[in-house]
Image (cartoon, rainbow, N blue to C red; front, side, top):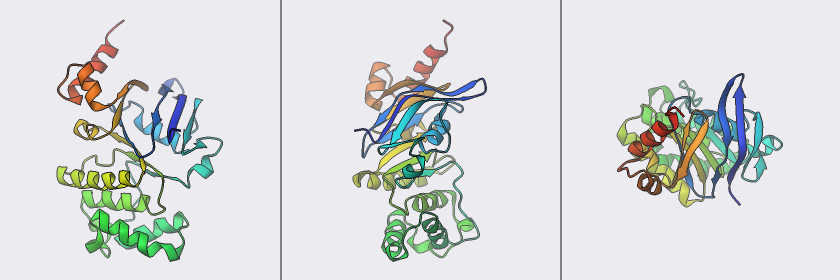
Length: 244
């Protein structure tokens, strides 16, 4: 059974259809990339699947839980790192992680080993006493990810987590994600960086709320006779936008 599944998932805001009959399935331990221009519907999709927004119509399931009927139970198994993840700059790295551990009701007896693991694989161990406001952009994103992972979620939603981050920090961030995949964590990842999309097992191209294409990067490039995903996606969007 798919870890993430949607059936005709739709969300409208007055006359704007932000997500239009979305049908996707994401398997356990897979990293699935949502790619598309601003306003494509990527963030709305994330917010629907994490129970923040209710759909106008259609349905969705995450880790076996219905995104509307079982929204509260759903939250125990997921983590959502939004574009503006709420770090507290006047708290240290360790204090931020402990704050989120309190929010997720992580038992204090289980925290020490988990925090040590998170600080270790994120490279934040030497900075545990540094204030979050003094961290670089890349380190802030790593801290945000560590906070999101404190309750050991099964499904991770990342909404353009490396936007504005330098290339080296982006590479380090992806190393962390690959480690999570080895632990069978399922990741839904939205990005505007096409080179990042190449790292995903499968990608879905969204445009104006619709899913125009969904497959592996190699298959999409081959079908479009393109050398890169950027070339392929420009071609797909161009054809979609042509007057009928």
